[in-house]
Amino acid sequence: MAYSTALSQGISILLYIHGIAEEHCNNFLSTKVISEQLNIPVPTTVKVIRNLNNARLTIAKEGAKGGILLARPLAEITLLDVFLAVEPGKALFKIHTDVTLQGKEVDEVKQKIADSLQAAEIAMQNRLKETYLIDLMG
Image 1 (cartoon, rainbow, N blue to C red):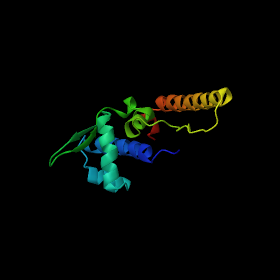
Image 2 (image 1 turned 90 degrees about the horizontal axis):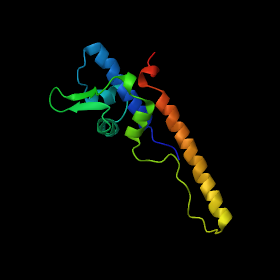
Image 3 (image 1 turned 30 degrees about the vertical axis):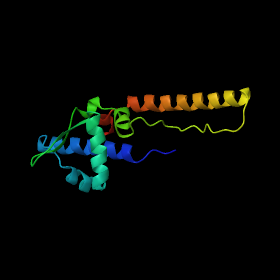
Image 4 (image 1 turned 60 degrees about the horizontal axis):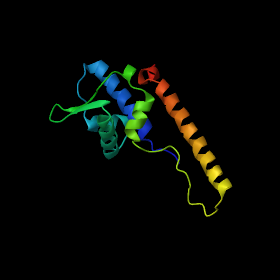
């Protein structure tokens, strides 16, 4: 199973907001501008930003001077924070459990598979937790 492109889009959105905020003194950015500049369809941009807002990585303000800002500095946001925001509640691996075979060995093998995949997911999360978005800046 592969994840959607939402993780890379979320990272790009946060980095873009950071870059523009540094240049223009923290003005709120419109979703439309973000969408156009990053070449992400508006509906997708809205969905990703909604997830970033729900995770309190961005702040949204409505109205004529509204838009999106970072809720905290890039030095405080990890790749895991973004991952959990844009892929909420999704397990990395789906396990096939509809096996017609029965028996102790089958159950043991299924458990070993589940344990191995869970260990891989934990390793991935630990790796994402080590990288802050500021580390991605040149």
